[in-house]
Length: 330
Image (tube, rainbow, N blue to C red; front, side):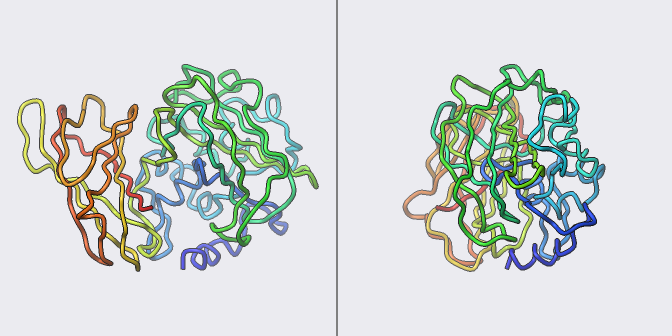
């Protein structure tokens, strides 16, 4: 259903006058355009991002930048990077249609990773062509609230995927290139993984920024709202403060099933706001890894029927600010 919706939305490529050639973007770890597209999906097919950085990007670059989330390209790129893409324009690849995705912000959706760990990368193949992928990472101390420059990038790629295999159909989120490789070692905190897809049969080159945090995570995504087709979301999670006192509060999280099959297990993840720590949880199992808090179902509430819901509770120290929740199912 989602693939049909997307195909209808992007049937006309507004970025160029010629037919679409290679198109794609990182799905894991998600690029800014891909995760903002996910964040903004609605049942009517409109793109209305909830994440503030995504909303600011669309306000500057228009909704077409998300209908065409897979087209951050330069037809004359020829794999060039430093000296070709100007400082402050890395995430847009110097493409004027995507300048909103260069805006500095600490609010972009992030993928939680473990430094040095092996990771299964997925790069969408909206249109498939042969080529290689070069992955770079920011230097330690990178500040997401300032424009990204080449001096803030490590000079050499930490991983190169030379003509990797692919699976699934083109023109769909179900089709992608895939490979496994080690993430950069000795990294902590917020970073950008910068991707360059250089076609081997033309000069067309794709660029993209994936916001990540090295905090012991395993690919969980936070900062993405609960938009989208209910049939494509594994689960939703909402946060409600039920009691508060000086220095702390109690909250209830509702996990609901908007899909068309029963859930058989769920995990809710979030990054607690500044100054907030979770001290206890009931009706679930808490895991804290770096900045990331995750609650996995108990045995008795792992199954959630279609249209049904379950809850877990928590006690936290700090401000009562509600975090942005991410819900996943095995």
